[in-house]
Length: 423
Figure (spheres, rainbow, N blue to C red):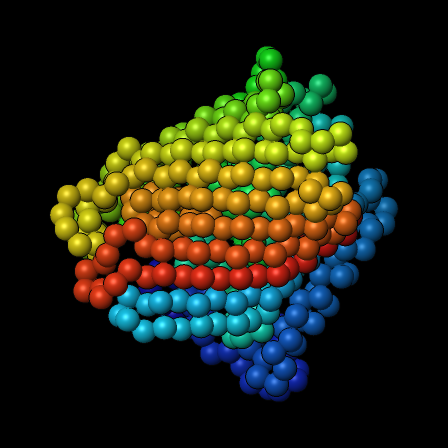
């Protein structure tokens, strides 16, 4: 037995299509609280069937519980294609089918308290690493692996009788996107596209006067990584980085043409490896953002033009060599996005453009890679509030050249996807 190791229970899910096992180190999985799921070598979708077999019994209404359980699901699936001009002068392309499936279960425990949990899995037509994971962090700084299944919600919610104050305790979702067709955020958007992410901690919301809302989040971070996007050289090995904070003041009450006004501050203490991960020095990573959106009617049949924008600044940034960039000194920490949209071009048809830039020192956006310019057009056809299709074309290009690179990396990608919610 490994020194200092306390045995924890292990759950093993057996795939019967072939008696071959996933030999990943059991000790590592148990230390991380993992549920080990053998790879299926006979059928790439067998893991999905096993998952469905696990989930469906749990979605049955509870009997004799003294309260009603509510359950539902959402599915997002589509075709994804990309091309890349690599830094070394080569080219590459990729095509795949991807999907995300999420099941939720919730129950009102009292007039003030609610419990909710949700299981989420992300899958691909290419390699899948089928596993039910109970980790508190994601496999990489920007996401989970295809085939992994996680609880991305597991929380208790309290709210007062007037619905003006609310507290969530546990694992929950946070997202503060611009209200546009290509909805994106520079700071918090835990699970965009077919990705999986979450926030562990406490989330307090309060309704203030004149339509303003106060949001305060205390986020717990694991030593091996975060549960939402934190790009390198952000690192959580220092004990001082265990707890971060996010504060926001937002109004969605109409004010003239304005439909959104928001200010936010994100603080991740002792997490920024200024000189790179190999150097022990750590600094606080602190960002501020401002968002706004305005809309104007274009016709009497409901067509609207919406213009929205966001600006963010990181107050401390890493040295350029820490990110592998040519030159010396600190990287720039600014980021912005601007979006122009027409809603109900015809009933249920929406189209939007977005242009954005995130300098190398902007490290916490799920929608924008640092050191990138982005140009995107997206079309959405919404059939019902629960069923829609979207088509996106996007271009991304690096701003600054990396050490040893022959040229800037240039990406073009396209997807066509459907989203269906079952309530």
